[in-house]
Image 1 (cartoon, helix red, strand yellow):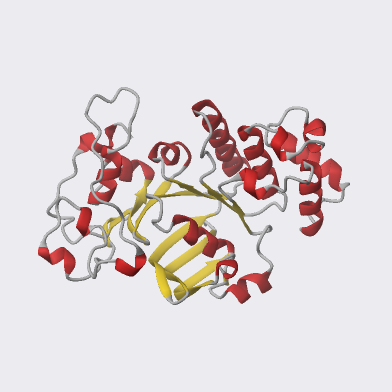
Image 2: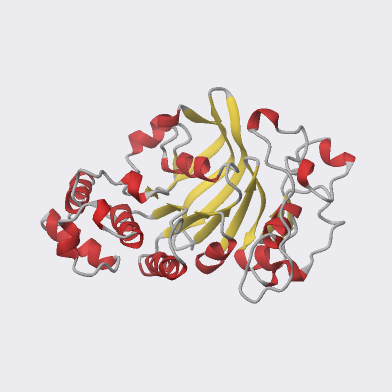
Length: 329
């Protein structure tokens, strides 16, 4: 029987009384991998902060719905903190490694202090455990890396250090927020392969956040597409990327460059509305080429198309899938 690590049910998030994320339904099983994609400002990172229990530092909270981790209800920030799950059950790998790593601390200090804080030395000296972690994430000469500072490492090496820090407490669920940003293609491939290997070998759950559909395709089993603080399409990665049913997902795929693609790229017109100016109906309607008057009536609920595919679009049964849209994803 599959063990569910994370279950978000109709989760809404607000900061300073303004709702920024609405109706997020997501489940991650042990050994499973889920991608979250969408444009900047779609609510991806905020959702992950809620999962990791770090909303309080932003003055945010889960205002509706429920969130459970490893079978515990952690909807309130206090419950999440008191359960002591961060670092041991769930851990968040932030986007910018250069900002996340203290420039005045050696890499070895980062690791050994994290290991001590999580009581994760496994009965061996923290420095030995730190060396093992760097070796585990594929860094050559780990002893030398322990003596270095963040600025002395390449972007790819810093990302490996971030992964080593993230898995120091042997967490059940790793949330990687844009782990390949600003890395060249070859290094991106190496980082994704490392995350896939940890996901498989450690039977660890993985949430991979990205704006790049190709990254998600390479490393996840299912994908949730977010727009305007909501999940608008969710299903297996293969199904969503090859047979997208929401106009926003289709638009993302049409705008994505790919090797061998001959069709002209089509950008998405307009810009996403800010949360205080969201329309009363479908939040994508102002930019959607298929929008009708009915789309502005109410926010569409997720509709189940099959056991592994849900879409929030009131015209989903009228609009056909263009197989060519997802073929090059």
